[in-house]
Length: 333
Image (cartoon, rainbow, N blue to C red; front, side):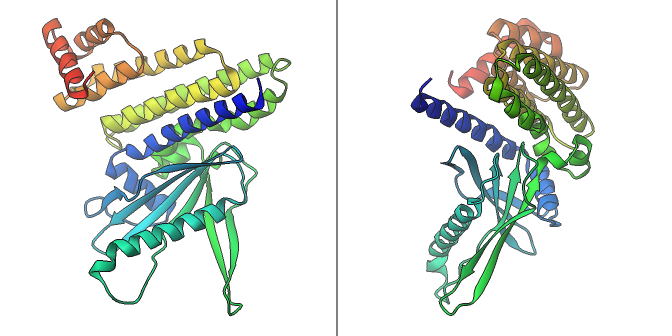
């Protein structure tokens, strides 16, 4: 494969990963606020705080490093603050430069948005930053740069680093970092990367490693279901996180393992766990859309979806068909 095609494939893979990472921030406000409180050492009240995505997310590709940026605005009775979150997969020392540029442009944009409301002194409010590293261990605890002003004053600009690999599944749960749980699968990335340097010779070792990733996917999915059962996350949060596990496994398998049969095995594992939770509790009408969406994303045919709805929800064929048809009308199949 020539270099141009390799670069195209890597770019497509980065975009896929970016989309998966973005999905982690579509969980409920309650779950997101709890995570922000932990990451930024805040104490926002879930009841009195609103959270919005302030700007569109975007991806910058530099030296094959994924840089997915997201700014969230939290408003409470006490304050309003913006938070800039970046996921990163490689130790790129220039990241802080890009984040500083981004923050400055963002602050400038916010100033111009509010300029008509306020004619006072120009003030740029920079967001609070964090870099979340996934899949790497040998990285610093923070990144910094120095800004020298014309009068020779020096200003240190520092961004803290959060290393997902340093958190066990239980530590993530204890710290209410629920949206980051699917990233446990990336703890195997570093070893897979080493083995892939001699892919043919290390095929058996790669297969063994992917089996470990699959086991991690199952264990993480089980923990997510427990969180839903205990009311710490809602059914839609569960749907988002389970789907992220499936998609992250496919990403890792495609990039390092490439055994398509394993993708189906993971789908079956997660579908089985998902079916069990659907069977055990009453389902509200509004939640059925999420159930159908999950089955569609797991590549079930319409007949299979109808049979599962009938079995899991204890409904007849007519009602199952009605639910599925209504879903397609709402989503314009």
